[in-house]
Amino acid sequence: MEGIQIRAVLLLVVASLSVAVADSVTAEEAKELREEVREMFYHAFNGYMDHAFPLDELRPLSCAGQDTLGGYALTLIDSLDTLALLGDRQRFATSVEWIGKNLRFDINKTVSVFETTIRVLGGLLSAHLIAADYATGMRVPSYDNQLLNLAEDLARRLLPAFDTPTGIPFGSVNLLHGVDKHESKITSTAGGGTLTLEFGVLSRLTNDPIFEQVTKNAVRGLWARRSKLNLVGAHINVFTGEWTQKDAGIGTSIDSFYEYLLKAYLLFGDEEYLYIFQEAYAAAMHYLYHDPWYVEVNMDSAAIVWPLFNSLQAFWPGLQVLAGDINPAIRTHAAFLSVWRRYGFTPEGFNLASLSVQHGQKSYPLRPELIESTYWLYKATRDPRYLDAGRDMVASLQYGTRCPCGYCHISDVEHHNQEDHMESFFLAETVKYLWLLFDLAVGPDNLVENGPYKYIFSTEGHLLPATPQISLVREHCLYYGAFCRTGDSRQTYFMPEPDEDKKESNDTRFFESWTKATYSPDYTTFEPSAVSGLIKGFCPGLNHGQKFGILYAHSTDERHYYETNQVQQKEPTTVQSHSVLVLRGQSSDHLPPDHGSVHNDSQTRESDVTL
Image (cartoon, rainbow, N blue to C red; front, top):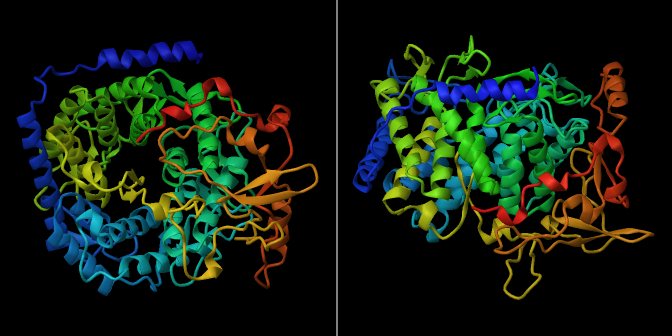
């Protein structure tokens, strides 16, 4: 189908969906809605604590619990920073103390690397940063880094997943025994590329660069295998680097890959993430955007393969707010919201050709993405229409999903059938963004809006503060009064001497991500970079490729490694293949056609990146 025809058909959706006219939310009603959302949180949280704890998740219809991820009180961990955000000092402190005393990860459980990272590792790190800091107003007197120690232990148990020729991690790992020999070699782009925030924060808190190195190598490994159109597919073989599903989109299996590129730049100030985001975002807007919708295309040809809105796409307008691209965010949010208002919820899939719920994708598992974008757009515009949207969402959740002990999944949005399951992210994200929306309208009095730091939200909604220890690492004593690391010299981040040994991780030969190359005709040295994110007015004039003359090209010897290991299975083999080759000294005007340079006319404006 031709692009112009698709666009015409898709635009009919907005006109065909009726929207009820209602009075705008008043300040007093916003206050009432905020308190209603608070009650929603405690209805679900108390239901979990009374009927499911310490199992992972609540079954809200039957008032029972079940283990779904690893059997370590998942919902409690995921809820910690929401308790802090609501100002519940007693429950926050009690929960932190219980986890510190009782949680352990030396268990024979095979877990998802992605889900464990964003839910458990992120939850522990966020709660640690709140509980350990007097400036947050939620300091726990008895706290002595127990959650940080647990986070480091957990992350080390996840590290074996990154031992692949490409640097892209396996999808699952056993917390006691590592990666099973029968583990699938296929993983999603989001699964391999949505780990940088949590692992990067952990590196800064522990002074150990290994966590940040392996996750950055994973991003590089994925980006190196992008198509000529700067698109990435949905699933990839972590050994051969071949795409096993070439559908490119902004939703299922890819979504948070884009999200973490921008957020890693905002939190860490690493220009490389911004450079990749600019190119990836420009390609997405060129090939995937059919105003106001997004479709899935073949990553090589850009041929449309799936004219579908899926609910995970709904995070995108919020990301566009962070990138400063507000106008398309407004139009896309309005289109997505029209689907919510038609059914009361967003189904997992809505077919843009038939204008109906996609067969087999009729459920609504309490997802937060559209609510998240509503919050960000209200924060950016203060347009009351987003408060009206929030009110509609609260009504839908209260009348459609509320169960005796919590909130239920909807198995069919057309008939509002309830299902006996409540994901932990309902407490970590869904009610959190709703509460923040109405609190912002009333006059914010919370950690995010009035606290001592700027916060980046992880893809699980966890609060990661831009503290000097996290965001100013790259300053590293470059001026008087800068944040400086002290202590164990084995964990020094910077290598100012060109002949110093270069550390490696997963046998991928990238030097520390917080160093940059200085080029001369005869040799390359490495010097500390003084770049920092969240510094007002910072606007590098050149993109990463122009400044450093670097392009990414995947190694050609991975298949050889894979085929060799298929024959020689007797003993463990050290991976010798490079994840990515860094080609230096080439002008960005002379890049090989297979990996074209950034399209300057469609880049995100760096000066528009804002919190």
